Image 1 (spheres, rainbow, N blue to C red):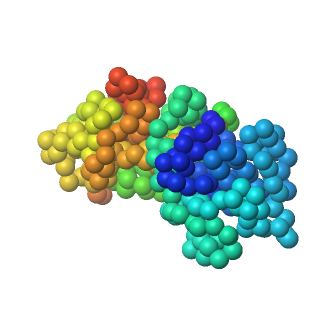
Image 2: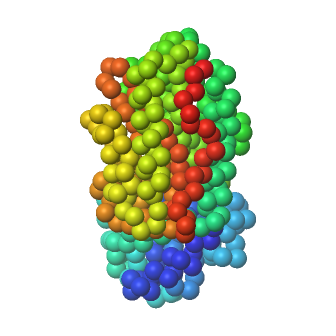
Length: 358
Ligand code: ZN
Ligand code: ZN
């Protein structure tokens, strides 16, 4: 996962002498070294790469980065701006790209005042590069999915009338960590019965009842990459209406996945799924987009939404997650993650999707 070369290629195109990376996800993408929050910065020039962090991370950074990155340690007396300025002077950097969509106003003001170079907005370089995953990234994404699926398989044993949403959510997190996840990729959503109509509902103390849907949307982080999946299952029994709604969502998901290939816009993929739900008479109950990019971050580019008129590239990894949400009554969402390939698309998910009645 050494992406230094691809960032460098973009520097030339953009007439930049270097790219400054302070955002956690971009730093990790460029270096393969994970440090949290604001604890680190990478500076990639056309011929060299630098990584600065503080003493808590120095030893780990050396192990991961030496040979590729020149390392520097930030201290109370020598802050990031001092280390940046030393490189700016020694490498004669004039135009340095920065992450305009991530950097805080305060940090920007400080760097603009203190750094002896021109700061050029260039976050889109990383945004675009990260849209196309390489084989190693796809392996990490797939492994992350396998961990989540293993947790799902096991949580099915706990789904019965009387089970509490919060307990299911807590156990899903435990199981993913138990099976090798580094972290959760977001707070799990576990919603049952009428709570299911909240697409991003927070798990409550509600006990699941017989004849209700339970929607579980959850994921983990493995080797720095996120998984994301949703399964909706029925507990006890399912009414004809529940079956009809479930089958409609599943048909919409299949249509969206079938439409997803390189060169097709995110908008067209979204429309293929949306049309199925509208034709079944549930159009007003599917308000969110079909999917989003998944990678180092749980939500990244490209989106499979009505707003994305750009064609999907080979290597894009997107979620496929249509849903129907009837307020006060029920909700169904089914989510897989797919990768756009040369010949079409591949589903990274192995978990079955026929309506499961537990
Ligand atoms: Zn999800
Ligand atoms: Zn998602």
